[in-house]
Amino acid sequence: MRGKTTSYRNHTRQRITFAYLSITPAILGVLLFTVAPLLYCLYLSFTKWDIFHAEQWIGFGNYHKIFTEDLFFTKSLRVTAYYSFGNVLACIVFCFIVALLLNQNIRGRAFFRSVFYLPSVIPILATSLIWYWLYDIDFGVINHILGWFGIPKQMWVSSPGTVIPSIIIMSVWASGNIIVIFLAGLQDVPRHLLEAVEIDGGGWWSKLRSVTIPLMSPVIFYNIILAFVNSVTTFTQTYTLGTQGGGPNDSALFYAFLIYREAFKHMNMGYACALAMVLFVIVSVLTLLLFRVSRFWVHYEGGRD
Image 1 (cartoon, one colour):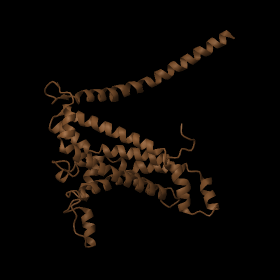
Image 2 (cartoon, helix red, strand yellow):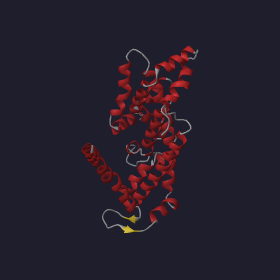
Image 3 (tube, helix red, strand yellow):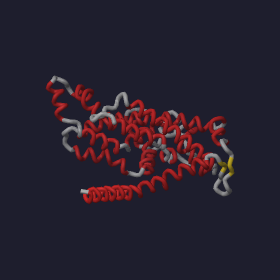
Image 4 (cartoon, helix red, strand yellow):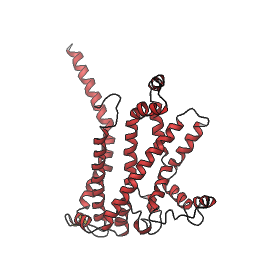
């Protein structure tokens, strides 16, 4: 009996050791490529550093400048908030509707699924250049089509009033990954629940409101987080606006581009790190707030842990 107990303990110890060894590379990767850069960025945010000279400790000087002197900070925050709200809302609504349509038994369903997913595998730089060509005021295809209906040419990415909506349209077009996630979630909606609604006389709206959306709420919430994080870190779209960057009159000055401009154009590495830490805090607080609010509308089939 004692021999069996000792053998069981040795087997358990081996399994635990194997488990720790298995996750060690992942833990080292997180520490080396996430935690260490984050801590170094935090240290640099309290310094004045231009790469070419040794960093100089200035305490909270960078943060004081951010909140009291830097007008671009508040402007980039407003631009990023405007874009994030519009982009998340448009992506979720558009992708969910498309996923519902592609989940139906229609002819050519596999073809249409490929068509909507294809833009998401194209590099964002390439899609940005394609869309800015489509938006071009002189030879862009969109203005050319509008001309057929007598609509005058629009300065899509050259006007402060239309540049953000234009970038939102571009981002929604390339959100095929969100459509795929919605489609995977729709596949798990139990058929017998939908049939029960039909037996009770309910139509498509009743099935959508009473069954599909509640059961899809965890997937919707996941996609909201995904779209939100992608929105606040948007960079490439505004980078390809031209040599000035930030769009006309800095109307597309995203926060991530402001960090890039301070770091690699003005060589204010310490100040850029401070901006990055502020963004980290803002995203963390907003994400935590989203999780808090999700308790009131996200339905987990097995209950919340």
